[in-house]
Image (cartoon, rainbow, N blue to C red; front, side, top):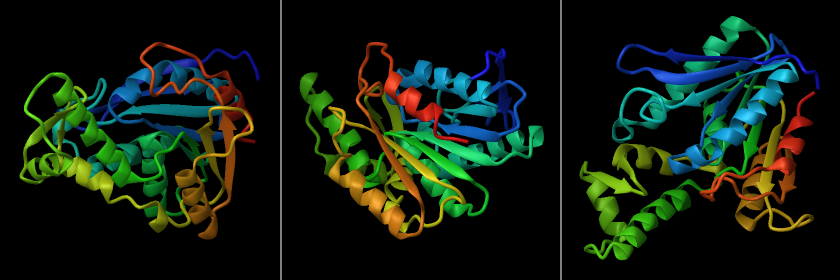
Length: 273
C-alpha cells in the first residue's frame, strides 16, 4: 500500500431541506468507486472511527470511497422519524451517481450490519450496476432484527420502571402512525415496516462480481452462525459467488468503549484486486 496522502471531502447532496451528508476519501485512484452503507442508530456511531480507518485504506489502494449519512441521521437534514427506505435508497443512488461523475470505475457497495442487508437488497433491485459487495457483520434476518429493536424498548421501560409494553403493542402503535422512542431514537412505523420486508431469500444476482461476507466469531477457526450460513447458502444457490471470512476482533458495533478490529481491517484490505 502506498503512502499517498488521502483527500477527505465532506459534502451535502440533495435539495435544500432533504440533503444528506457524505464524506469522500480519495487519492485520485480509478480502480473502483466504493460506497459505504451505514448501520442503524447507535451502531453507526460506535463504528465511525473504524469505518473511516478502512475508507482511508481503500483510498490509498486506489479506490475512491464515499461514506453516507442517510437523510434523518448523522449530519444530514431531517429526522429519523420521517425516514423511509425509499428515501435512503435514493441517497445510495445519488451517492453512486456522484461517484461516477468523478470516475467511471466499477461500483462496489460496502455495508455494515443493517447496511449490509441494504446493500444486498439495493443491488438486487438495481441489477447490473454493482460489481462487488463487501459485507461487515451483515444482518441476515430483517424481521428478527426489528423484533430485537422493539425488545430494547420493552427492556428499557422495565429498567426505568415505566408502564410495560409488549412488542405486539409497540407494533400496533407504529402501525397506527405513532412515533416510538427506541434506544434513544424516535422511529416511525413506515421505516421499520420497510426494513422487515427485506428477505434474503428473495435476493438474486445482486452483483456481477463477488459478495464478500465477513463475520465475527468468538474464536479463530469457528464457523459463522447458523442463520448466517443459511443466508450465505441461499445467495450461493441463486448463483452469487460468496466469499466467507471470519474475524475474532471485539464486536465494535456492540460496545460503547472505542476499540479496534485489526483482523477485520487486514482481511478487508486484501479482498479487492
